[in-house]
Length: 333
Image (cartoon, rainbow, N blue to C red):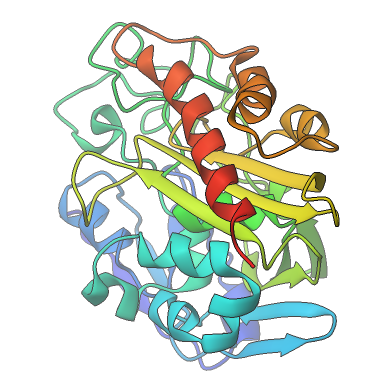
């Protein structure tokens, strides 16, 4: 493990003054909250900061539901949010995404803000024995493109990186039009969650739009008719403590005749960031829940997808996942 110093600032303003940064490997100082992902990467010598800045006790951990929607303090743990009875009723896709993530022990420690900033599970990124990883070492190449890429993205990748985004929670939140509240030395700002994560482009090591000193302070999910009839489907290689091969978050509002008034659809395990599908949503609007109608709308998700050999199967699987998640969401009262 690379040696580092640990700062424990007295308050959030003091933490921001230390100008740490999350989500990139070339930052000399990084913030740490729950640390469930960070500690593993430190142990494996993937992350080598000179300084860690602890956010323990400095961020809001409240879970608040109002007529306007749901507000989650960034320090609320995954377990606390998943166990909240009103979250399970009013935003089932969020509770399901959390309960399908990690293990109970990790969920007890991991924070909501940290979950959104977790790093990819690409084995070429996490194993320093592979030298070619643009996300870990900019300019070194991407070993996954011509390597074992079963776990990798078919949407949003390119010649510099095809690593899939890892967060289940982010997929559910993207489907519900969530926003994140961010605080830095220059003040506060609000970002749509769809804008938080960057496509790899030519700079895969830059994963988010957060600037030095900026931290996520809260996640806000607006109240919406689609939220209660929602579902998170996770397809994975084993029943627990496994990351998604493909996942789908679907939220629906139905008309009186049972047809879909409006839909929200996002995918995980297949994109270099949480992947929202507005064209699929538009195709579902006005559609019935008949399997053939759902399959026709879901087929749009394949447009622009590019397999790299081992992950070609994801293009068909993600369409089937959308159909199955929509059927489950549509059957909810």
